[in-house]
Image (tube, rainbow, N blue to C red):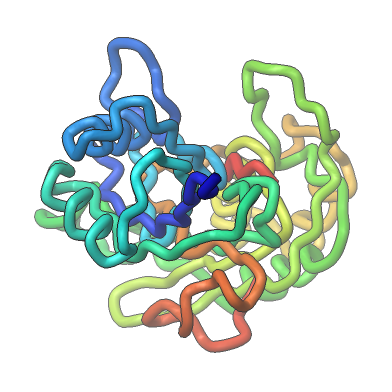
Length: 273
C-alpha cells in the first residue's frame, strides 16, 4: 500500500487582516485560508499544522506548516494549485516532500524573528502596518549592550505574557544570536532561538526601547532578565512590527540562503513570539 504523502509548506503572509495563524471560529486566520485552499483543490479534509502560532497583526516571510493529503501531487503543482486559491495577503513560497512522520512543530530546531522599527519625527503615511514607528531618537549602541545578556539559556519569565492556557514547558528558553541592526530609516531587532514564549519578542523590544530612549541603563535590562517577573520589564511593542522570518529544520528541509538584510550567521518549539 502506497504511503500517504506529507508536504512541508513555507508560507508568507501580511498579517494585518488576519486574526493570527490559529483557526478560530468566526475569525479570519491564516490556517483557515490554507484549509479552504486545500478544499478548493479537492482535499477538503486536509489539516495544515503550523510550526507555531503568530498573533493578530504579526507578519511572516517564512512560516512553515505540514500537510498530509490523500492525493499525490508533484510539489510544483501543489504550489501553483494552492496559490491559485489563496487570498492576496498569503502565499505559499515553497513546497517539498517531507519524510513520513514529519511534524512542522515537533521537528523544528529553532526560529528566527525580526522586529522592524522606523525612526522619524513625523508619522509615516505609508506602510504603518508593516513596522513600528519610533518617533524619538534611540541609542542603538546602548540597546546592543543591553541585549548581550540575552544570549544563552535563561529564564525569560520577565518577558513572557500570560498566554491564557497552561504553559507546559516553563519559561526557560535558549537564544542563540541577538542583533540590533541599523538600516536606512530605522533599525531591526533580530533574534534566533530554540523556542519563544508568548509575546516574548515584543516584550523584549518594548523593554529594549526603554534603554534606547535613555530612560533606563543597559545594566537595568540585565536586572529585568534576572528578576523573572513580567512587572519588572517594559511595555509590549505592537504586533505589526514583528515578522517570523524563518523556521529552522535539518539541512535537507531548510530553505537555502538567508533573508535580505539579515547577515549570514545572525541566528539569534511551539513558537509564541
